[in-house]
Image (cartoon, rainbow over all chains, first blue to last red; front, side, top):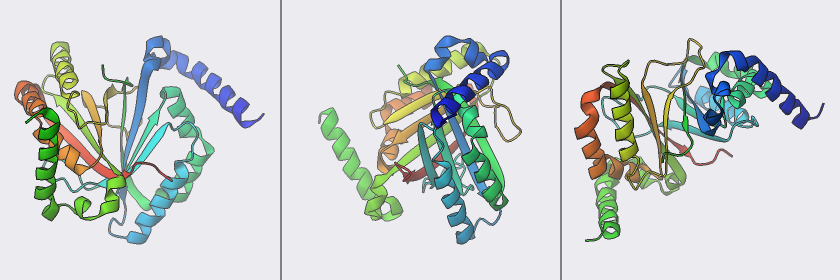
Length: 137
Length: 137
């Protein structure tokens, strides 16, 4: 099975497995929505520049996952108000076409290898997954 | 002063006021970076559909601010793992060209009016401001 066939197969398999559980699949116009996956990484040793560089290296590898439509790797901006959370090390924000593509990302070998190789560096992650129209009209 | 001149004037004024404080302005290649402003809104009465509709109406008005490059309004996705935060009502995520454009957004009359008209609806906001390259290479 080539890469493209494998992806289509996995998409169908995911669609089947999600059909019961996910309202996104049942509602066709939900496909016009965008799935945003925002992860905040907290390093165990937040002042260790080597660990930060290592995790950044891992995130660059992770960015190669094919189902990611857009990805942004950030660090806390210089803005500061009490409501702004600034204690994380890296912000990782991905756009996915829909929830199925996001599930494929979670199970992608690149993602699994990333967790295997780099998860010892972080003490926690905080994740916000949100869905909404691609364009605000 | 027309809209365009006013914007240019404000940009220059902001540039001047930020020149001392902000490392982004001092480092020219930081302009290749993207500023992501992610706000999670928590309604006071989270099960009140009318309040949710009202805030959504406000967010659509807020989306008209000119310095916003891209905006996504979302609600929690159906994904659920312990690390996923799902207790907010709305996710508001904007892209800005740089920190200056984001400062202009903060002081834009549309933004000030939004806070005036709708802030009674939420009990808190949690904000993540992060900067990083537009494209992951």
